[in-house]
Amino acid sequence: MTIRGLAVMLLSMAMAADAGAAVTKAAFGKMPDGTAVDIYTLKSDALEVKVMTYGARIVAINTADKNGKVADVVLGYDKLSDYLADKKTYFGSIVGRYGNRIAHGEFKLDGKTYDVPKNDGGINSLHGGTVGFDQHVWTGKEVPGGVEMTLVSKDGDQGFPGTLTAHVRYTVHGRTLRIDYSESTDKDTVVNLTNHTYFNLGGVGSGTILDEEITINADRFTPTDKGLIPTGELAPVAGTPMDFRNATVIGKRIHADYEPLKLAGGYDHNWVLNGADGQLKLAAKVHDLKSGRVMTVQTTEPGVQFYTGNFLDGTFKSASGWPYAKNTALCLETQHFPDSPNHPSFPSTELKPGQTRHSTTTFTFTTQK
Ligand code: BGC
Image 1 (cartoon, rainbow, N blue to C red):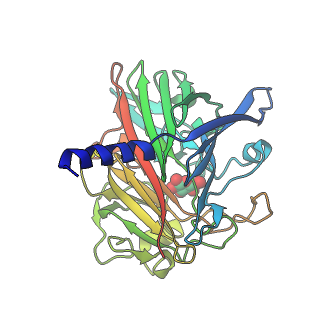
Image 2 (image 1 turned 180 degrees about the horizontal axis):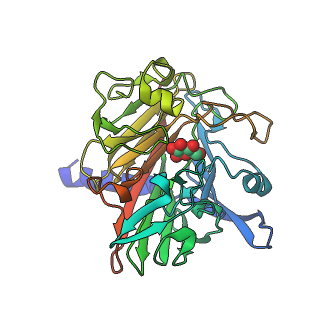
Image 3 (image 1 turned 90 degrees about the horizontal axis):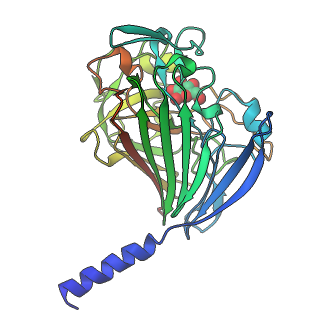
């Protein structure tokens, strides 16, 4: 075969693999005010992803283990009422307008001070405030291979300036779930959206994630104070339990006598990703040795919050009654750094009228024997 023939063949194979997932839509329930909530199922040969309009949340990701056994690898519920009753975990949601924390619920922009809710222990602001994007019903629209969710957050919503229009597009391509974000505003504002899915690659109900192995593509992380607000330092991971540049079992050092781990009760920190901001690069890779499932996360964002579900306490349960207890899942929230509006040296989260902010994160599910 000629080189050109080979190239055409490879391209058509790639296009066939990317033929796009089948998309179906169904009703998931109604909000207390009667607003309908829909759920979309995106299905390829390797992956079935369910996303609903309440909080633009990932409700399920079904994928096979090394023996072909399919399981749901994300924490969630099978009823809308359970999602409405849980205002603590943010399961599967898009968090915003500002994912993670803003110190003392306060920041300055263009010389003006803005106050946003101190919904994290009455001290700091967390995940966009008391009624964040996770609690809104987004508008879903079917797109090839997926669904695009749209939310318009009004000027002054939770204290943030500017009408912010957010589009979050979920598409499935073979083994990959891709999330494309875009945001625009009509006044200067700050924005930091991320997806807050809790993964357990062994499958919901299989135990904790402490035996899973993780690699994080970062030489540095952002140490915090006891309220989990970055001090501003970009500290080297070398020689610390934060060094995941080589695959390491999560539970190996989680209880180490190391201040940042003690402050957070485990891992709940932002890693400064190696590679250029704005380019798709490896963020992290997780390998569940028992099931053989592997998840590779790539992002254009500069950081990732690796959170080991330290605040899960068993109050909330799966549909089959399995308690969502401490360390039963992990989150990899690709993002700008926490509290960036108060740290001019961090990559900026400011957005101005006329600009559109874009970012992309992909989650690829494979297996390894
Ligand atoms: C934060 C945790 C927080 C959790 C809420 C994570 O993004 O870093 O500190 O408790 O979200 O579910």
